[in-house]
Image (tube, rainbow, N blue to C red; front, side, top):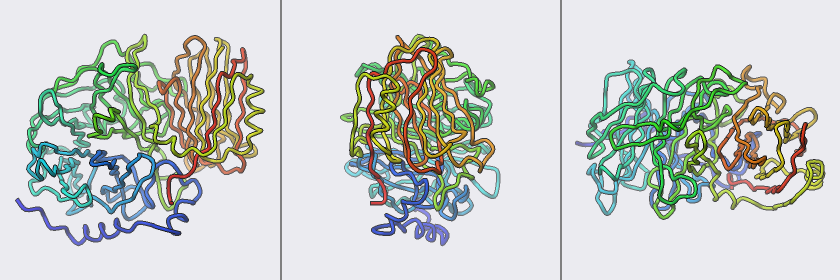
Amino acid sequence: MHPRRPSLLVSALLAIGSITSSGTHAAELYREPWRPQFHFTPERNWMNDPNGMVYHRGEFHLFYQYNPFGDKWGHMSWGHSVSRDLTHWEPLPLALAEENGVMIFSGSAVVDHGNTSGFGTRREPPMVALYTGHHTTRPLQNQHLAYSTDLGRTWTKYAGNPVLDLGKADFRDPKVSWHPASSQWVMAVSLPVERQIAFYTSPNLKEWRRTGTFGPAGSIKGIWECPDLFPVLVEGSRRTSKWVLIVNVGSGAPAGGSGCQYFVGEFDGQTFRPDPRSQPVTGPASNPSAEPALWADWSTDFYAAVSWSDVPQRDGRRLWLGWMSNWEYAQDVPTSPWRSAMTVPRMLTLRETPSGYRLLQQPVRELESLRTTSSRLRRASLAEATTWLSGLGDPGALVDLTAEFEGLKSDTSLSLRLHTGPGESTLLQCDVARGRLIVDRTRSGRTEFHAKFPAVHEAPVRIVEGRLRLRLLLDTSSVEVFAQDGETVTSTLVFPTGGDRRFELSATGTAPTLKRLELHRLRSAVGR
């Protein structure tokens, strides 16, 4: 079968997508107010879900939901960027464009090393993308295929599309991977309204057979979207792993709006079975209506998270990132000419706790290459640490901060405040008695653009033997917190308007001791 010739609309979209910035223009483009400097953003226009994340021949590919024509949702197509170090990203032309009344919704990409699809050769394996075709003239979503034989630079839509069609209005977001134990391709795809994930298998990526479903379970208040399914190593082991099923939900997350939940269990190549020992926890006091679930992130700005396929075995990491926004206000954030960013890439492992397995997330080590100056403090009181931090001067907008505390008691309430101007700050607080990590952005800067943006968010945190470990990544418009080695994570947008930045540590009740504090200033990774 011969590929369809691109329409005039597609040709125009590809022309738009091929315009990338360089030199002086690029430097200017990435200096707008609140433009992230070490988080991925498109040069301009709207972006949401990460798509098609795959590693091939030295490059990490990041595709994403993209509107080539404006800074709000619409005309969904796949934008494209690549990186060799997960830190510096090279923009590429639009990969898959809306065409003939079919938008390009979320999906995944793989390298077909065995050439099971026949689109390439074993020596030159094709990259194959599976995505949802969203029909704009009728209520229909089905699964489509496209392939590339030039390292992802150009893509051909398969003439036999769709490759999977249930005739349903809501059926989307296929995540495909190779299952070595059964020597077949596996697809996890969402039935959003039913709150289910369906599993399919295929010998060639073109013909699919349904083998099982999972759900409803966990959080079912919002529609289920953007699944992922992968094995994750247990902390401290090189061989022991469990399967993790990712289910992103459109509403009902702990901090309100959209969020990302996960399940830990086993997958036999046919269907997923959850581990009965890995019990979910109840919703936080800030949103008691949130359903019991295991949440990958407890703040507002982490959605549609999916992992990279085909990361080499010699690397051995399970890597992912998420869209850093929330469907409640994503189209209203005060940024221009772009709208939305991704979180930093993160490495995943599992930790066995008294309540079962928990996902651990840590920023990828490659981000350490952005560190410029580093300052360290050992063994100090909170007052001494605050004075020491003040002596460092304004750390700037780009900071990687690690702090370890010991001696926390049941009456301890520990606060770390980031001041960004008179009366303006973002507060991180640990309430030991309640086992809560609290993020307060009510006075963080620009908050008036949406009624649900200024809020206080809570996350459960386990304090073991009176110790707390925190790592904060601060960019121009975000605060990512990794507590207890990433067992509790919060990703939060902020839009500060003030000038100098400074940190302040304080406590009520029993004051803990600062064991270690490291502050690394970072340089920009974009526009250079």
